[in-house]
Each structure stands twice: as C-alpha cells, then as structure tokens.
Figure 1 (cartoon, rainbow, N blue to C red):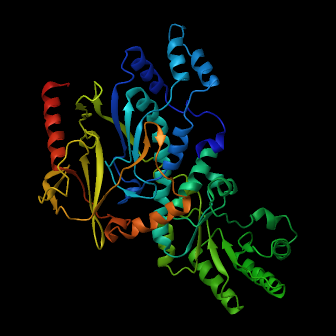
Figure 2 (figure 1 turned 30 degrees about the horizontal axis):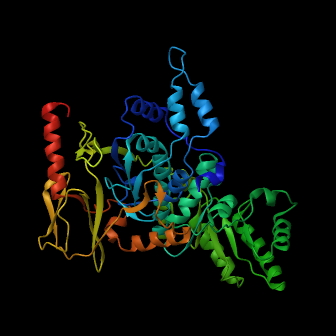
Figure 3 (figure 1 turned 45 degrees about the vertical axis):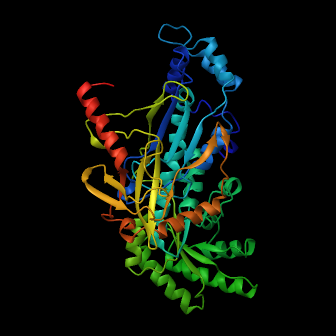
Length: 496
C-alpha cells in the first residue's frame, strides 16, 4: 500500500485548490451536500486501442489511512493569504481533524481492460469529501494505469518470451520507480530488478551484473569466472563490456567451469550494438559449444517497436530487459485522467440534479449521471461497452424483452442493439460503503493473471499497434438523450 513506502500521513498529497474548495463548502454550509464524481480518461495512451486499469490497491490504502495529522493541521494553520492573515479559520481545521471519510466508492477491478470515457472510479458522498479525493485518486490511478498499459503492449509483442523490468535507475524518483515496478508486473512483466518492490509488492526479482564488475578485474575472463564462483546458481553474464562476441567466448569458458561444478550458465546479456546480428552470432557460438539451453538477454533502451523489429530480423533473444521507456512511459508520460462532477443531491433522499461540463471541444464535454459500464460479450470475447446511468435506465433484463440500444457519442447515427439475454458484466464494483471497505483485494499475481485473460478476450484488431481497431464504447439510449437535452439547454441558457 501507499503508506508502506512513506510511513506518514498522505492527506496533504493534494492540490491546494482542493483544500480551499473544501473550506468554501464548509464555510457556505454545503459540505454535506451529496455529490457524484466520475474518474475517467479521454484517450488511450501510446496511440493504442486499449488501456489497463491499475492503481486501485494504492487507492484503497490511501483511503483507509486517510486523516489529517497534527503535523498536517499545523502546516495548514501556517498558511496565509495575500494579506498575510491565516488562510483557514480554526474551526475548519478542527473540522478536518475530526473528518472521517463516509463515501461510497465503486471502481473497475485492477487488471481490467478499459477504454476512453468509461468511469474507472465513481465517488458518491458529501461533496467536501469527494473534492478532497480528486487529486490523490488521479495521481494513483493515472500513472499506474499508464505503466500497466505499456507493459501489456510489451507483453503482446514478446509473446511467450521472458519480460523483465529494469527501470529503477531511470525512473522519475523513488515513488515513480516503486509504482512503475508494481504496475509493470501487473501489466505483464515477469520480474523486476527493483529489490524493494520485490519486498513490498511480492514481485519476482531478477538481475545480472554491471560493466563495472568486469572492469574491476584484470580481464573479462577473470571477472566471469569469479562471478560464477560467487553465485553459481544465478549466472547471467554481461558480455559487451569490450567486444561482445569475444565476451560470448569467455562466457562459454565460464560455462564449462560451471558444468564441472554441477551448475549451468543461465544466460548471456547484450546491452549495446546491433542486437539482432549479435544475438544471431552469439546463438551460433553457444549452440556449437553445447550451450543450447543458455538464453540470450537483451537490454539497451528497448520498447515494443524496437522489440518487434528485432523479432522481424530473426534475433535469437528470448529474455527482454526493458527500462527507461517502460517506467517513464517514454513516448507518452501522462494518461490524462480527469475527475468530473456528474450529479448533485441538494436534500437528503431528494432528486438528483445532473451536472456536466461544456466545452468548445467535443472530447472535453463530460457525461452526466451516476454512471456504470456494461460490457457485452459472446463466446469469442468482448463485443462492446455501454455507459449507462444506474439511477435512470430500463436495463432490467428480467422484465423486458426489448433490445438495449447503445449510441456512439460521436456519431448518433451509429447504434447497436443487444438482446436482453446477451451475456454481460457491469465493470464497476463496490469498494467502499459509507467509508468502510467491502471489497476483497486480490493479490498481485491474480491481478496480473486478470490482465492476461482480459487481453485474450479482446479482438486482435484492438490490440494491434498501428491504426488499432476502435473498440465500441457508447451511451445507453436514455443517457444519450439526457446528455443531448442538457447540452442544448446549457447552450441556450449559457448556464444552468
């Protein structure tokens, strides 16, 4: 969980405007007004066709440990406005000191394939509390989902090869490294080089040695032999410190020494040069010497595009170590998730007033309502996802024989109809009820397995890297009509 790393209160892990808005709600006596916020993203990362939901475990850890400590409140008390006077009244700080979260939270389980505009998290509760959760939830969901998606893309291209995450030294700080190691394993990596991640998250740990090990000895052969004597049951030798193919020959000599001791040369590693050519030549040398079971590891700024190219060139690499371009999401460093108010309840048990944000850009117009996502499927896998309002819908399949109509939000002429008996699942599941966790958190290995099964249920066209097929996501007919009505009303009136 999040607090395992920091060991301190994280309630100030937010933007100042969340606290100033919370102060505004408290000051105006609207803090307890019920609200619904939806967390979603607008575009799949990496120009891809899918995204992997990730980060829920850390969200749960954050919420279960939520609370303003005395040190937090002391800091808030020290903050001043433009006039030099305290920014917050003492009564508000007392309110924060006693604040306990009572929100209902639904979320998509980690490891689920998700798509733009679908709520990944839905928060329902007092508006002040919902507001305070905005920034931390976005922080925790955005980055992990981004890295898990990158790892899933790498897993697709390496197929059944071994995929290792080697990015800690290039990660964006301590938290970036830890978070990336967890998310990369969930997305499809087999292991990480990050030992602390192995300890905290139960991620398998793998590693070799660096060039400095070789350079610290008089010659490469001596370095390899010494390493093999020290760690005979974990020998992968980095062969490109001086001359890669000569390094392979030295590794073979070390491998023969290991065999005499009852051990094996597990692998050699290439970290520079023409990886396709060098791996092919290295494979020849290894096979001719009787080391057919010694694997070839490659690293050196790899990503899914480079790996695909190396495979097309006939490389003999079967273990891929990916670092910088995985843990930094090198080609797209942010997912762009957003958190939007979708409904307000002015009186307890009163009607919901649906809210939406307008924009000159159609992609930035939010969808109102207390949203849920229904995923239809058949024997071949996923068919389409339909966003509907859980308060205002006619989706009771037990009492109707009418088909469900889904409308493309970007083209209302595109409609799909689903038989009431069409198999489906609703993606958002209860996680917290009145601030108490009701969700059984799966272990990280089960989450990783979920990614694999989810990807298997996606059509191949959605998973391709170049011009992926657009997976169908739409609005249930009643929600589409409500959104259209609200847009027209807001356009005409200029405000609610």
